[in-house]
Amino acid sequence: MTFPVRSLMFVPGGRPELLDKVSRSRPDVVVADLEDAVAPGDKERARAAIVEALAERPGAGAVLLRINPPGTPWYADDLAAAATAATQERLDGIVLPKYERRSQLAEVRAALPTGARVVVGLESARGVMDARMLLEEGPDAAYFGAEDLIADLGGRRTPGGTEVLYARSRVCLAAHVAAVPSIDQAVVAVRDTDFFRSDAAQARDLGYHGKICLHPLQVEAAHAVFTPSAEELAHAREVLAAAEQGVGVVDGQMVDAAHLAMARGVLARAGAT
Image (cartoon, rainbow, N blue to C red; front, side, top):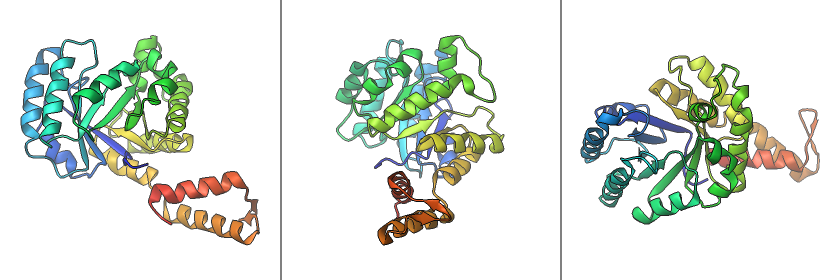
């Protein structure tokens, strides 16, 4: 994975002054949001304000702009503004929400300069059902949007999340098959860090690489969950060493090819050897 996405931190597009503030929590990716975070009557003003603010980039990792989805009145102008900002190196790329058709990614790629990042959102019934086909087009990363999916289905969100477990797993599987980094759903209870950690841990167990963050407190928690601990690294090295010696047993448990693959994955996520 060449695009670190442990934390995808969203900032309301109408509050450009927050760009610098959230960068202090050092998220892997900062996203200025022109979609959900901006009311319809404020879209044009927010777009102009955020593009102006990007003249002085925050001290963070990648900086992206979430545009409004295709088919909305603001999409074309959002994409044009993002393309200009990316060409001027004010922006690293965009987040394309409600990704449902392969042609949408192709159109965005054609508008942006070479090398610009595109993160797509799979957050509708159509997008989730067609996840494998859509991700074969090669976006730089993909996120699963539980809230929008349930709104599309007419369902209800619950603390346990069983209503989205199938879709959450389907997106993660499709991303893995396409070798696309996957980013898990948001936790809207922004100050409940205990719940965020447990939800992030479940996502990590499923195979996700990172998580949407809506508050700086969530960034630290996301990094703690999605960065292998010293104990995990030590265990991974022990598993690999045991296999080399032909022992095949670590901590009383048999080591087979699947355990070797998991150990290598742990070291890869940490950039360790």
